[in-house]
Image 1: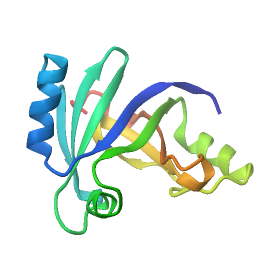
Image 2 (image 1 turned 30 degrees about the horizontal axis):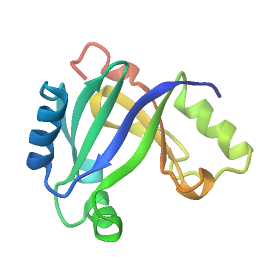
Image 3 (image 1 turned 90 degrees about the vertical axis):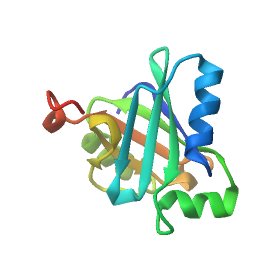
Image 4 (image 1 turned 135 degrees about the horizontal axis):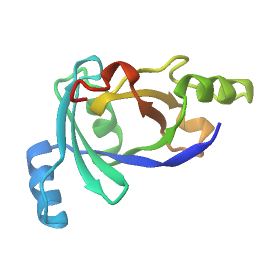
Amino acid sequence: MQLQKIDHIGVAVPDLEAAIAAYTQLFGVGPSHREVVESDGVETVMFEVGESRIELLGATGPDSKITGFLAKRGGGIHHVAYGVEDVQASLEDLASMGMRLLDARPRKGAGGKLVGFVHPKSASGVLTELCQDDPAAAGHGG
């Protein structure tokens, strides 16, 4: 497995609209992408920062993965996402090294990406996302 770059940093926010306004003011530019990921109960808003992005994460309801995070920890950094060439191969490599995974197989994430997560206990307390462009989303505005 070879990490290609820091793709994005996910930031959980209790009020997505207020966070969008604050980050727009901070960066001097609006978001580049906004999307609801129904399977996770999350609305994501991306801001471009050089070759990386900041992903604001807002809950879409009480069963959202973000709702639980906010209740335990409040707003702040939720995860760090690294770009890899092949998420499936990377997850398999990490599993073979004894790393604890949250996903054994990639799943669809925001922005036309395939994603897989590594448990925070295997990464010094940091939820770690591996992501790659989803070939199935290519050319579909993902």
